[in-house]
Length: 283
Image (tube, rainbow, N blue to C red):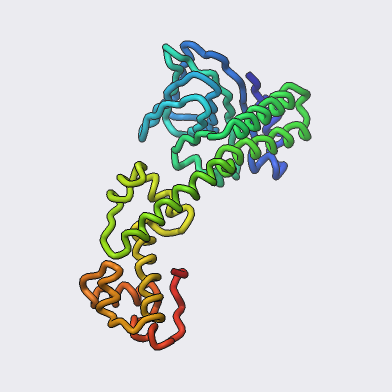
């Protein structure tokens, strides 16, 4: 356990790199049986906890979560909390108390645990902590303090912003599978529940997946695929608009025209006649 003397922090506070983000305490608790902390008013610092092994529980006023191996969570500043190790499988944790102007730039307020999926990511994170402890165990100089703060930024970046290639590949694979299913159902209707059942994924996961990779919800994306197919039909065939509407799952041609214009900025007739379309948000 390392604690930075408060008078040293005050002396260094005006340096912009320290004011932006700095550590006040950090440590490693292995197999922390009976480990328990309760703070009814929280503390001024954010608390990062990374579970190396075993498990434990974190309780906040707005949620309760179990922290397992390879998972990190950050308790925001001034939030009531308590956390404790599992009795049967006590956690081993790496932890940091930190604060600074840049704390708000990290999504700790979302109160979402982050699981580091790949062994490479976990090894990198542990390596950063080892470097951090080496620095905190050395002499208290402003240079070392700035270096420690920089390592904190790297640690938070690894947890919140870096995604392993395996995770990204899996996300794109799932997205491709979902879109292929949508293409096979362009002539019919599809709900989020239908897609969730087919993909064997939760509705919230699918929604986050599509929002993150396409900037549209799953159903909004499905509608845009329908309109995209209708655009091809309008340009490449002479079929009536009502028939094209039916081929992409719209029983009411007037409703189809309204949705078509909302997505493309043009009516189906104007689009067929070659008017320049802004294709809002790009279909």
